[in-house]
Image (cartoon, rainbow, N blue to C red; front, side):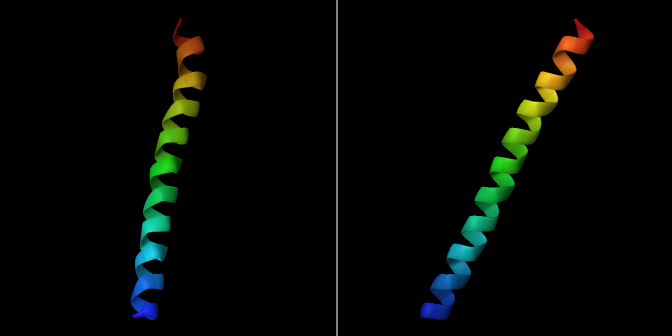
Length: 38
């Protein structure tokens, strides 16, 4: 039971990190790209 719980939380943490990385990556990319295009 404990092993399954730790595996579930680990995958959830990885998914959260990936989601945050995508959000921050897109935000930083937009900040860098927008001023150059204008």
